[in-house]
Length: 205
Image (cartoon, rainbow, N blue to C red):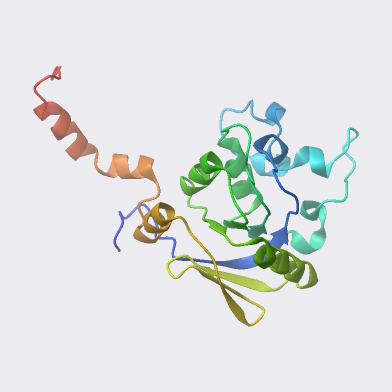
């Protein structure tokens, strides 16, 4: 293993898909602000896309995340500028806790993509036509498997392989198992403390 023992390499992600159509879906739509007053992220999954999924009386609206056929989906297929708006890390946390392991889209807000990387969730990009075709295929084949190869930057579904893009920094971090910076710091605690102690301008006390 090329990373640390505590950080798994993310070279491939496989699962069924869920299509979330629409451009400029922001983090407030992904997780409304009123659900962010939590001490931990546990339980956030049930509030993902809450205002798009339920009306004021908590009756279900027409939304893919309410459909039985997508309840086991782990790969979300989105459109342009997904995750824009505020920098809240609760957005990818909510999606992860709903069950999402990877997101394929036309483009992502930079901070959102960074927050996803910190959770080991790849944000894979492709052009509009590719995404539209994949969303349609998922709608027609809700039980169909999608395989994402992070290292080779390809997705395979329905008997075809399609080229996609993974940001080079993200790809390296995922494939080498160095995406969890907090775990990396903890695993190198002794080295960090030794370096700090050796610095001439720090107080050893």
